[in-house]
Image (cartoon, rainbow, N blue to C red; front, side, top):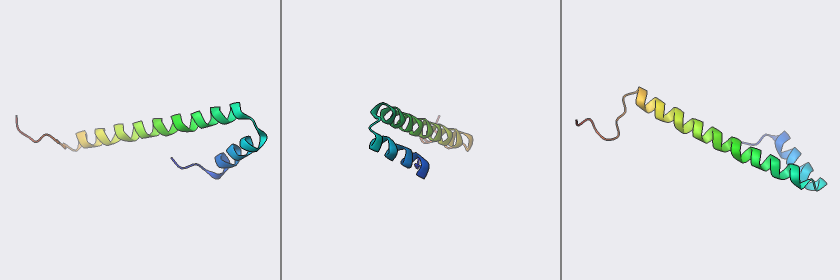
Length: 61
């Protein structure tokens, strides 16, 4: 997840203003959003492999 300039500007303003609660809340939101996006990407990749018939264990039965 890439931060856009407005998010970086908002964080910089919080640091300058000393509003630590909002800074911690915003940081937590960014971390959680990145985690959700990573989980979704992993899930989508797994579904894609399953749909394509990919079998990492081989085809033996």
